[in-house]
Image (spheres, rainbow over the protein chains, first blue to last red):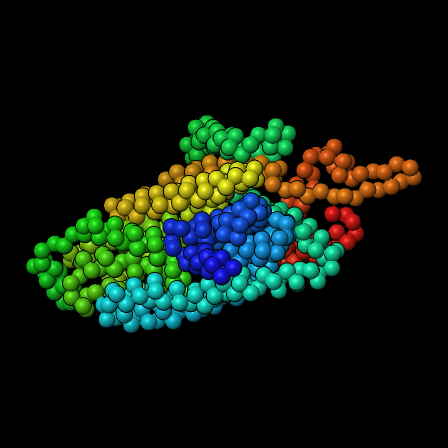
Length: 248
Length: 283
């Protein structure tokens, strides 16, 4: 368990490290990416994949603007998936656990965003001295120290000590509540989809939403086929549509 | 003030011109792609990340400590954008710094003005395209594969998305450097960006529609017994429209969001409603 807990803690660190070109996928789409990896570490890849996929649907439409998110993805992915697998809960339950952990994890997000201000002030002094090395240290090394305390250690503790307590906790909850929480896990993806649709919605394009739905519900096309269909609509629009623009 | 500027210009003319090398720009771009959001904070967001990305440029262009200090301090100002399309800004600032170091009259205020002026609009475009559209389409493909139990789903998503991010970042950074301060006006003037966004919306909505059908599995076990006959509500719904409940709930949430109901409120309502509906045997 010690080795697994350490590996999970490393996963949590990579997830929260904000390495720019990686953070878009491993940070902002964390449940989907880390699900199978965490599953692999804990010995059940398929469970991890199912939990990650289910959870990702909830956050599908979550567009992080200005870097400020209402969810902590490290807790909602690495930590929540670990706990779900360790306590052998079904994916629907994993989804509810992820949303809860994502909200609890906001404490970590808040403290990271606040504590990092310290390094900016130290960097100000380095800038005044023309010290580029100091800039590097305060931008790269010091924020990792903060992450170590608010993400890496909690993730380790959750997996090493927490799973048992979490399992006992889950056992005490009455059955109606457990079934209810699973149902909530089923409802939550609608929020993800609704957020997504809202983000890219334009009234004149509503027909494409309906066509996409029909293509899968009635024609049973798979996702690649639907994407190609969407691309061909876009090409039609590009070449034959939007004539009024040329006129104006 | 005038005297100062003139002296500056004279001394600049005496110096041989310093040019940035491809290596410096590559270094700056790599720092940008690795660390620009590492020290995100409430006070100045990406300021430190931006300053860090500028260090290879500043080191090349300014040799004495005072000039370096001035340039570094200049880039510690508040900064926040979408970093893929926003890589245009450090690219552009690199070219401005180069001209400034070679004696062109560019003030700190002008550089900061350009940074601040561009970061908002670019973030708007970038967030919509990157997170709203590219991410969604690639996620839809990945999730489709993952639902069949294939680990290749997340992997394909990761590879394609990362490739998009690196390609966009590289392209915009070096285009930004090439065009200098005219870069954004070239994009902004034409309506091409709007048409691209429209096309992406069309693809995005088609895929979103398909996701409503393929990913939601809301069913009701409710059976209404009237005299001798039992009406299974799920069968009834399936006759009207397969996946009816998924569509209905999504539509409900969508209109809630349209009316600016907060996400947290919706989540709480869902949790309470879910538990109550299960207790009543409706879900």
